[in-house]
Length: 131
Image (cartoon, rainbow, N blue to C red; front, side):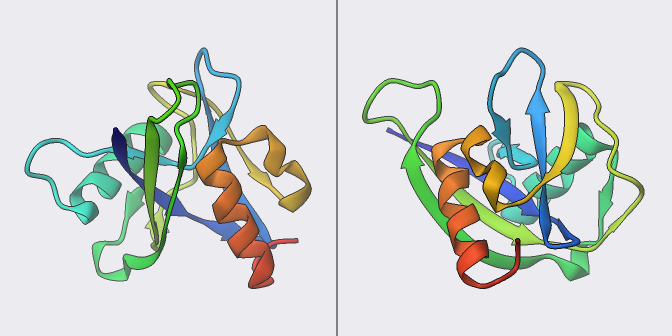
């Protein structure tokens, strides 16, 4: 089984924005699952607004990459496909709804994230986009 998720990549000072959901012990990339009929862009805009009180600028949304790994906290053979995008935004990242905290992580903090996020962290580090 594959869980289809969209993720927003926001880099600042060579660190990446991550979120900690209420009741969870691993940090996730901002984003989430699509509703039936939603495009990647619609899902990303909705999820980021729900989680971080930010409005992504639709015209700035750019595909970054797709990463697939064992889904965190799910049975073996359940995978997550994390389709990642960058985008400009309006506002200040502020946790809301299911998000308890947000923070910026460097590469050394990657072990606090999920298996799919680890792949993203490795890719960002290889491209010298995070420290």
